Length: 92
Image (cartoon, rainbow, N blue to C red):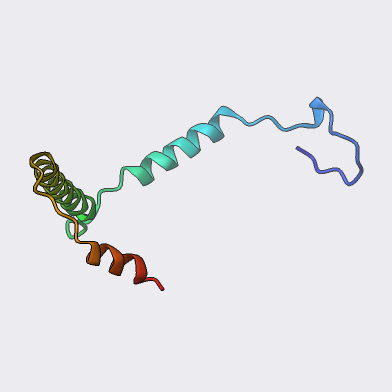
């Protein structure tokens, strides 16, 4: 497309239409970039270890919640009013 210095919009005849060859060329370039194999030394295990850690924490938390629920159901869960008061006042 030509660049005009005035405020007039270019007509359809003045616009350059992209050829299919340019699109094919850019697709091929992208495919070559995406197809590059990683070096044998490059590995990423962050998501696996984080996923494992998350699952472990969720399992531990679920066990803890179930144990508290069982204590409440049996009437054995006792809340220390001193601990509650200390935690409420710890911010002040």
